[in-house]
Amino acid sequence: MKQSSVSFTTRLSLVLAVLLLAYGAFVALIGRQFAHEQAQESLQRLSHGLARHIVAQWPEITAADPAGADGAARQALLQMLMTVNPAVQVYLLDADGRVQHYIGEPGMVRQHQVDLAAVRAFLAGADLPLRGTDPMGSAVPRIFSAAMFPPRAGDTRPPGYLYVVLDGTAREQVAAQLGAERLWQGVAWASLVGLLLTLALGVFTFRRLSLPVRRLAAEMDAYQRREAGSPGPAAAAGGPPAGDEVQTLARAFGELRTRVETQAEREHRQTADHREMMASVAHDLRTPLTALHGHLEALAQGSLQTEAPAARATVLQAALAQSRKVGRLSQQLFELAALQSGDPVLQRERFALDEVVSDAVQKFEVGHTEPPVTLQGLPPGRLELNGDLQLIERALTNLIDNAVRHAPTQQPVRVSLRREGTQAEILIEDSGPGLPTELQQRLAQGLSLREPPIKRRSGGIGGLGLAIAQRVAVLHGGSLRPLPSPGGGTRLCLLLPLAAP
Image (cartoon, rainbow, N blue to C red; front, side):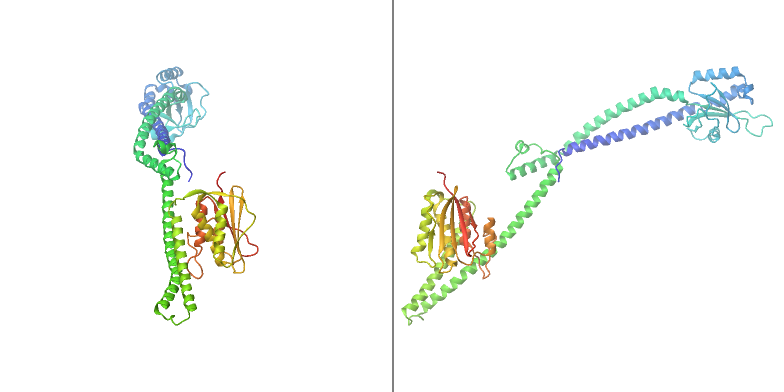
């Protein structure tokens, strides 16, 4: 999830500002339309009887023959109307709604046909405002006042109509210059002030409501930074995390859930590995203990008393061999548990590694082991190591002992020591069947040989000596790796960092 650089409170404030601005614009448009409608209705109501009054008071201008009407009377009427309301336009219509005369400057009429439907609705008292045709040709419906000429004797049709437009173009121009501009200025200022006040109140409310969320996000962010081992400025100062608090909480919850699931899975796997380890250890101990018990029973029952001393000695040696096997396995398990428990303390000292390797080889030579163990290669000179002497010696002993137990009797186990830059390289080679595939892969990748434990086909666990040597090498900053062996067998390389001169 991409982390937002804007806080949750800021985003809420921006959304509130946009919504308020949109609402203000909507209200302004609706208010403008409503005010325009109200002004139109008010003007039409105030001027509702204007045409009727003109017809009643100036009958000479409504003569059937417009050309014969009194020109002076029309001019006086126009001047009076223009004085009262410069925006009005007075038209004389015939019975079909055609403009017969316009009281004003000639040539201004562009639409000579007026829709009589609106005129009849006006005369019938329909709801206001009513809009009719604009003879000036603006194509914009206009509010008007209308009256029918008095009928004459013998007329079968209405003699005509007086049609007065109340909001002509002159009024529109003045309203656009004054009324609309002032109206919009007032609306703009009112909207701006209302927006700022509402926004300030909304931001204050949002910050108060989101304060617990921001505090929780800051604590989660600080906890994650401490877990990662790299406390940042926000965590050190105790301030809120950068970015969106909700995203911070969501990310922290996701990482916490992943960590808990991973930990639960690891504990489950460790529990299963521990059960398998105990079962394997029990299997490895049961076989020599059973044999040892059988040999001791034979000796204790006296069934071998009549046998030759050589037979009794053979049984005794077999019992001792099984006892040594049990002791070796118990010792290896104890050493491996000590090396893997937490952070073992190394008894570091400076010693000569070449002497330790030579002593380890001689120890096997003294025991007349089969196959023999030989030290090969040119002496590298004095190589000093700063580490735990007993652990290094134990690792070498385990590696050589493994090679001796798995190598054919006719082929010697070869040990060599050489310097490789700032490291000492100890090679142990044998001509045996080689390491199991899984064991070799783990060594090559630097993975632990005990987590999870490696099972043998015959049951039990294997590689305890190798696991001890690997752990000792890691504790000293080195490694244990397998090397290619073209002639067969096993080649193991124990790398250890040399002490600074």
